[in-house]
Image 1 (cartoon, rainbow, N blue to C red):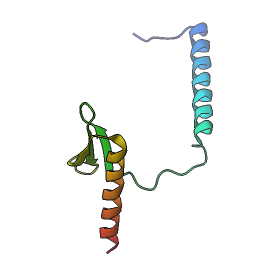
Image 2: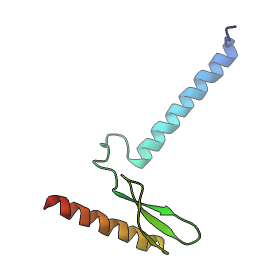
Image 3: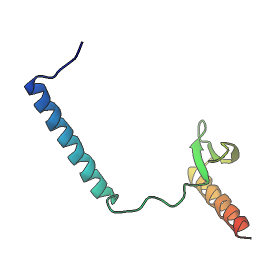
Amino acid sequence: MELTMNQSQHAYYAVALAMNQRRNMALALCLGLVGSSAPKTSPLYRVIPAGNEFFHVVDSATGKVKGFRRNHNEACALARRLETHDANQLRG
């Protein structure tokens, strides 16, 4: 059984699609995503909430927890320290 749209359904679909595309373009312009290149690398470590007032610093490649903090800002600082430490080791 083939489902077909009548003329009004097709018009509604076309308008909805155009509005969605305009919204996405406007959002991309606001966020500065149009014309920008993709990020060079993804972060090596991610800060993940782990329970009440705990944040794990997780290795993105392995999924292993490398550390934890009770404060989000401290967890982010730990992730940055680990990334710079790893980057320095790779450079030699």
